[in-house]
Amino acid sequence: MKNRYDVIIIGAGPAGLQCAEQLMNSNLSALLIEKNEIIGPKICAGGLTNLTAAFGIPEDKTRSFPRQKIFIANRQYEIDLVNPLKIIDRFDLGQYQLSKLKNSKNITILKGTLVKSIKKNEIITNKGVFYFKYLVGADGSSSKVRKYIGLESKICIGIYYEIPGVTDEFIWYINPKLLKFGYIWVFPHKSFTNIGIYFNPEYLNSKKAREILKKYLTDNGYKFSERNFKGAPINYFYQGCVFDDIFLIGDAAGLASKTTGEGISYALTSGKEIGKKIINPDYKMVELDRILTFKKRQERMSRNFGMFPYMQEHFFKIFIRLMRKGWYQSYFGN
Ligand SMILES: Cc1cc2nc3c(=O)[nH]c(=O)nc-3n(C[C@H](O)[C@H](O)[C@H](O)COP(=O)(O)OP(=O)(O)OC[C@H]3O[C@@H](n4cnc5c(N)ncnc54)[C@H](O)[C@@H]3O)c2cc1C
Image (cartoon, rainbow, N blue to C red; front, top):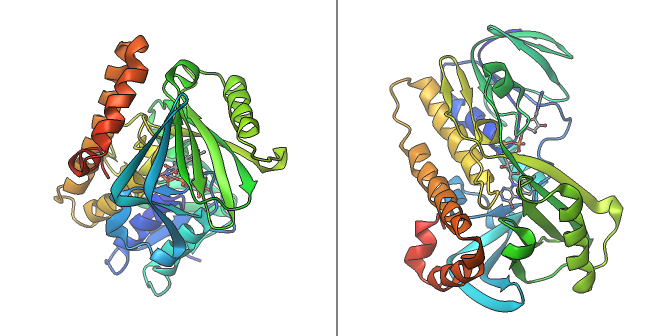
């Protein structure tokens, strides 16, 4: 196997796979490195907003939910979305993206390969040393590439239980007094239900968040087992994607929304945009700018809400009312 490539992408999540797809059939050789043997599985609730619509994810891989149930403390609201939210299992998303690379001649995929360290124009893995002209960090929220560049990360956390049994209701539970800036979600998958809590560790510690989640499950009659508990950080601290011949995409770039934790759409879009940029350095990344607008809008809104802690519940109620309008949904990226 050769060890010199024009582009090395570290991480075959949605960002890395999308970047590889963009480089497919270019005159650049690319190596996509993934530490896991199986492409796809990732700690994630699998919710897809309309920002992923351009990526052609097959309908039969998703469940679609036009109606959202929202609880603010104990009051229930409903919103009908113009563009339904969708749910996908990350294994299915990864395998769908991988299938698109099947016939590529210039992309090599190396699974079960852990990148241990990075030096100028080379990476050291458990399967040897590889050399690059361009390096793409698509290695998620604990990115080694980001650390190599010297960028700080800031994280929120998502934890969840996978509950046996399929439900049909897509639920958000908001309670600013209890959850601060976070929320509880109920995302129904095809063969189980993913119920979790998203929180900012600056305001809520992990132990307390887990207790709140367990109480929610118990109070609502969901049976859960500690074996099905999962959690991971989400880096939202965006400081750019382009650093000379090194690029960051997806969570490695801190592109996920601090407000919601949504990161798949940002990973896909940044992967595509950086792929184009590598092929043509003059390419203006307008799609990346477009999705950054949504991230900034969402984060500005929660910052404003946070300035008046005692008014938060009231603000959320106004927000829900506005979210019944199609134009407001698209203003926030759906
Ligand atoms: C609990 C939770 C729930 C979430 N729910 C949602 C949701 O409903 N909707 C949504 O849009 N987003 C959600 N997110 C966020 C979403 O999971 C991420 O934003 C998204 O996965 C980012 O994609 P990525 O390709 O940048 O990184 P990742 O998906 O993290 O992929 C990175 C890849 O790099 C590989 N890798 C890492 N380090 C190395 C290394 N050293 N060597 C080789 N390979 C390496 C990893 O194995 C992985 O495959 C959630 C996150 C969490 C934690």
